[in-house]
Length: 114
Image (cartoon, rainbow, N blue to C red; front, side, top):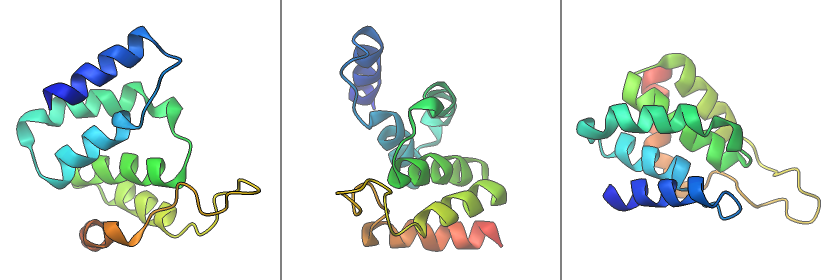
């Protein structure tokens, strides 16, 4: 977790070099239920919300909130984004979509969302 925080700090120092750590770190924490990191990742999610671009980013963002807070509204938002089948980018319609590797998280979100 220390490495993820270091990457975020570096990106703040050099904003022209950005990764998806701002959603990957919270998603890992949430899906692995690393409770000691919850407070930190919630602040990360709030801080970087404006960077959301692809459906996958939005999915991880909403899913992280839903899993950490057991929030049905956020779970439904994540599930809605998981249904997107086209990126909207003219020549790259498959980029940034939620793939089959997230099926287990989607099942948990379905339980939270009901």
